[in-house]
Image 1: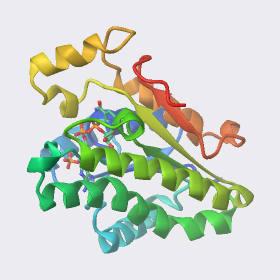
Image 2: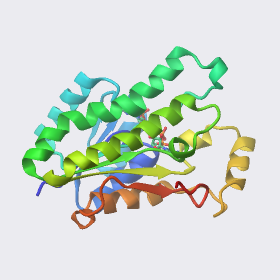
Image 3: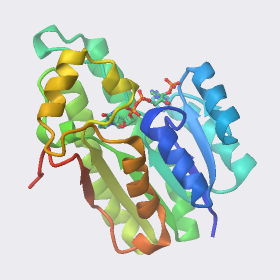
Image 4: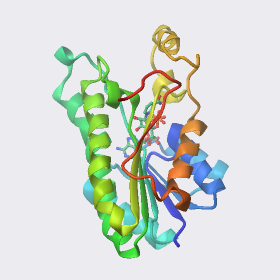
Length: 241
Ligand SMILES: NC(=O)c1ccc[n+]([C@@H]2O[C@H](COP(=O)([O-])OP(=O)(O)OC[C@H]3O[C@@H](n4cnc5c(N)ncnc54)[C@H](OP(=O)(O)O)[C@@H]3O)[C@@H](O)[C@H]2O)c1
C-alpha cells in the first residue's frame, strides 16, 4: 500500500501541522503551497518534507504538480485539501474579485486537486480524501459570504463523493475546525480575537496539532468505515445538527 500523502497549503499553519503529523505517522509527505517561498523553504529545512509550489485554483497546475509529486514519491494515497484563504467583507462591499478568489481556492481548488487523483485511487482500490472546511461553512458568518459558501460547498462535495468512493475503497471526509491560532486568525484585530475566544466554551483557540491528529486518524486504514463524515473540532462553539 502506498504511503504517500499530499497536503495542499502544507507549509504553514494547520497544513504544516498536518504534514508533520503524517510524516511522524510514517507517510512520505509532499507539501504544496501557493507563493510564500520563504516560509516554504524554512518549513522544508526544518522538517525535511519536500515542498511544491502551485496554485490549487489552477486545474492544469494541479495536474502537473500531482504528476511531479507522483514521479518523485509514488502514487498518492492520501490527499488533504487544506489550502484556503479569506477575503472578508460585508456583502454590500464585497467585490467580485473577493468572491471569485475565495471560491476559486477553497471550492474549485478541492475539485482541481481531487479530480486528477480520483482515477488512480479507484484503480488501486484505496484512497483517503480529507478536506479542511470550517465552522463558518456550517453556521455561516457575517462578513464571510464568500468563505462560508465555499466551505459549505466542501461539505456537500464530501457527502456526494463519499457515496461514489465507497465501493472503491476510498473514504472522503471533511473536518470543520473552529478558531485555530494560525496566521489567518492572528491577522484579525486583537479585540475581535478576544471576542471570538469569549464564544468558545473551552476558553481558548485550538492548536493546529489538534486538527492534524484528526487527519492522521482519517488517513489511516483503521478509519475505513468512516466516510462522508463531517468532523467538528471547535471547542464546543457550535454543534451542527
Ligand atoms: N485558522 C483557523 O482558525 C481556521 C479555522 C477553520 C478553518 N480553517 C481552514 O484551514 C485551512 C488552513 O488554514 P490556516 O489558518 O492554516 O491558513 P494559513 O496559515 O493562512 O496557511 C494557508 C496555507 O495555504 C496555502 N495556500 C493558500 N492559497 C493557496 C493556493 N491557491 N494554492 C496552494 N496553496 C495555497 C498557503 O501557501 P503560502 O504559504 O504560499 O501562502 C499556506 O501554506 C484553510 O482551508 C482554512 O480555511 C482555518
